[in-house]
Every structure is written in C-alpha cells, then in structure tokens.
Length: 473
Image 1 (cartoon, rainbow, N blue to C red):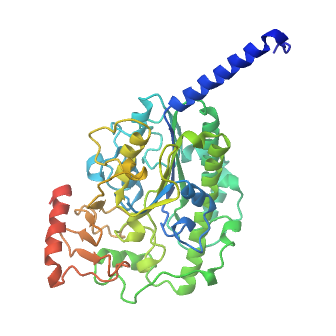
Image 2 (cartoon, rainbow, N blue to C red):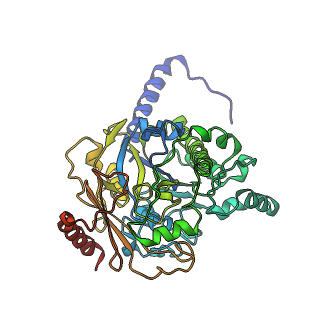
C-alpha cells in the first residue's frame, strides 16, 4: 500500500461531494439488491418446546429473538412426519408422493428442482450447510456450497469419532443424560461456524443459505451445562392415559411397546425430557451463533430469515417418542419468518400453512414470481397484513419405513397414512385399516378417536374423499 495522500484544500469540498454521491449510489444499489435468504432448520423440534411458543420451562433465547422480529405461526404442518420426505417437500414444494423420497431410505432424485436452483438462476450464492438428509449427502441439489456430516467428521480423529459415538449411544436413545464433551465434538457447532464464514464471504452479494442442525433429534445426550440447566423434578409431564393408543391404528401401540416407551415411569420420563430440553437449548445456542453474526454484519436489514423444523417430537405424549405418526406433536412444526420489507414483526398467525408453501413464499418475499408447477402457494400477503385466502385443508403423509416402524416390518409396503386437517377436524386415513378422526376443538389432545360416531359419518366421507382426491385411492 502506498503513502496516504491528502487532497489539497481547494479540492476537499469536491471530494466530499463525490464521496457523498458515491455513498448515495452504493446505498441505492443495496436497496435495489434483492433480499438474502437465511433458512435455519432444526431436526425434531416439538413446537411447544420454545419460549416464544409459550413454554415457561424450555429456554430458547435465540429462537425467541428471531420470533420477536418475525411473524410466528401456530398451525404450520410438515408434509411427512419423518426427516427425508419432509425435507424433500420443503426444498421442492412438492408432496412426497410427487418428489419421490417417501421413506428414510429414499434419496431425493437428482433431477428434482429445488429452491436452490431457483435462487441460483437469479444470481444468488447458494449454500446448504448441515444435515439436509438427501440420503446421499454428497448430492448438491442446486446448492453451490455444500458441507455435511461427512465434512464435519473429517475434523475429528478416528479416536475422537469413536469417543463421540460411545458418549452418545444409539441414535434413537431416549435416556436423558449429560455429555462431558467439548463443543468441537458436536456437528451443530461446526455447522454454525461454517455458516458464519459463509455470511462473511458473501456479505456483498445476494445469498440463499440453508443451515440445518442435527439437534434436538435423539439421542438425548446434550452437553452437561445444558442438561443440568433443567431440574427434572420441576418439568411438566404430558398427559398420558392408561389406555393410550388402544382406540386408534394398532401400529402405534405395537411400536410404542416394542421401543419400551409405553411403560416409561414418571421419573424416567422426566429424565428423558431433561435430555430433550437440553438438546433444544444446545441447538438454540447454535442458532444464535448464526443469527447474531447476521445482525453484527448488518445483513439482517436485507435478509428474509426463517426458522422451522422438519417435523416435531412426541416427547412422551401418548406414551411415544420421536415421530412416524400424525399427532400434533409430530406434524405441527415451529415456523417463524421475518423479512426486511413491510412484514409484520412479533406477530402471530393462526391460519394453517404447509411447509410446501415456504418455497413460493420465499420467492415472493424476494420479489420473484414463484414457479407455477409448485404444489405450495405463497402466504407472503398474510405476512404483510394483506388479504389472504387461508388453506381449508393441510396434508401430511407417512409411508412405513423399513427397520424403523416395527421390528418385523409388518406394515412396510402398505399404502400410507394420510392426514387431512381442517380448522376443526383431523382425519388420519388408512385405506386398509381403521381410520382415526379427532375433534380438535373439543379434544385438542387427540385422546378420543370418534371415527365410528354416528353423527360423524358425513365428515368422515368428506375427508376420506379429500384424501383420495389428493393422494389417490
């Protein structure tokens, strides 16, 4: 760098004027630049396990900070209560029976058109950092920059990987306990730090960054400081009936008993919840690393920020854990969206939306016309406080996953469970088995299956016809 040059006094006014004009031009260019997209996705986050959703027990200060700048949804639904098909629906805006990734073992097809292709074609830098669940995680699906679990594992030695696996136990474990391991052993911290690096590297151009965390997915073994921040004796237990799951689809009862969940004592459930809530808080800390970096860089002023989860978590409700069912704890997801322009902050929306609606909504918020072939539809007008025709129905579908649902795979290959949700009713359609119908106004906990009630025959026919119309007979 050469010596500092000072302009002569008689040119200083002109220089200042030029600088001011340059600043105005740069400012105008920033205003003309389309908004960035920061999509933060967790895995298996029960909606009610967050301060912004009313919990007085679960601490999520960073997610709450996003909610304070966002419109928060009470009735957002995933399109499948299992990771792979749900995530496929989010990024393609297609239902699982259309995009083809129906079960955990199905890879999203290489030719699937995604939100990443859409924004890349419009000049955005695109990145997917974290657990995207493409099955083959080396696939990019339109994302230029891709870091996944394999990328993270390269940062650990073989001995450290073995140590972490021994510490965590099985992936489906629900015994809550603390981990003594440092941050660097947990992939979510690395995903957060790499996302921050991406924000710094792309601060001067439009970007679409998809950061996807592993937690609070089982096992329930968070770091010690998060685990011990919860007193199990003070945790509220979900309501559980002694005859839980007996009046509905038999597969759920079989699965709950096989997994040992059905007989959990109150003390065991409290310890499990301590581990799960610790996972939630540890994930929240990673969300904070990314969101705080966005704000420190001043990028929040021109970025659409989304927080959601791919599906929920039963967390002991109905004597079950994880997902693979249509109960609200499993299919209802946290969802909040903030945007830099005319979007309501700290607002609550009670209209039903689906995760297939996210792709077209993001396009709309960034000033682009959504592709016509998408299954979802933009709810950007709702975010802006304008007239919006709410959904009459929300859908989810579950195909029985091999080696996961029951030990003998007795239901694998059968037609899926299809949920049709209205403001009042939830109908879980099984073409080959007894269906389920819940009155969500009088029975929001979904304890009484009223599918056989004489007065409900008409609503059953209507919702069955709707399921068959959308998903086939």
